[in-house]
Image 1 (cartoon, rainbow, N blue to C red):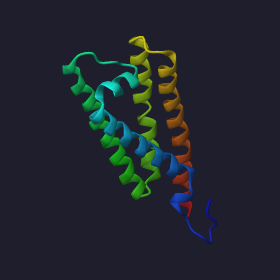
Image 2: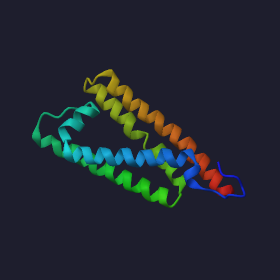
Image 3: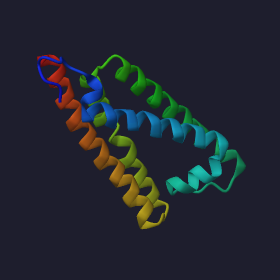
Amino acid sequence: MATPAQGFRSTQTAGFWLAAAIAVLQGVNAVRTVLDPQGFATYMGLPVDQLSALGWVQVYGLRAGFIALLTTVLLARSDFAALRWMALAALLMPLGDAWLAAGAGADGLIVARHLAIALFLLIASHFLGRAACAKASA
């Protein structure tokens, strides 16, 4: 954490780096849905066996790309309050993914990975909230 003499530096907060990880990982997911949609669907625990269904995987990728871009823009603006709310709202995705994967009979480790991502988002939202408070008081 920066001292008052140094001023607030967003890159010195855990929230910044957790949000940066969100942006990078969502960007990687977006690229994977384009390069290997069938492999990505299997990774998510929802294997696709019909060529016509691969488009839905790529729709998921477009949304992941949007999340990556939005997160990057909010990071560039140091808008930690908005990032905190975004991380909380994003909990719907890994929790929904876990539910869908479990319903499709996915391996327990795949479901656990989705739940771990939800936990990561909760932790990120906590640290993003702290960063927002630190920025406001600087």
